[in-house]
Structure formats: structure tokens, C-alpha cells
Length: 48
Image (cartoon, rainbow, N blue to C red):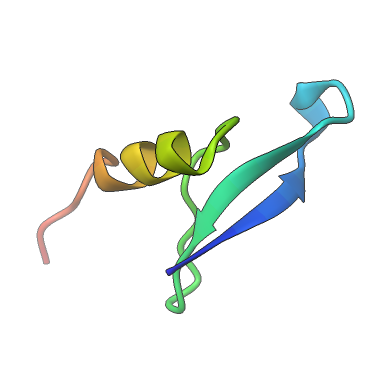
């Protein structure tokens, strides 16, 4: 897992932080690393 800055169209040309996983999954955008981690950890998980 890595937290990176990413530019989003809906953020008024501002960079926000996003969690990226080695599997290619991406979490929701956040303003802080703590918020990005919290959003990543609370995302919906599906059963296989």
C-alpha cells in the first residue's frame, strides 16, 4: 500500500491523497494521509 498525491478533476485543480495498492486498487481521495488511510480501511469489501 502506498499513499500518493493525485490530481482530481472534481477537486478544483487541487492535489489530494489517495491510497494505491500493489494489486491496482485505489481508495477515495482525501486531504490528509490519516483521512486517506481511514477511507481505505473503511471501504466496502466483497466476499470471494
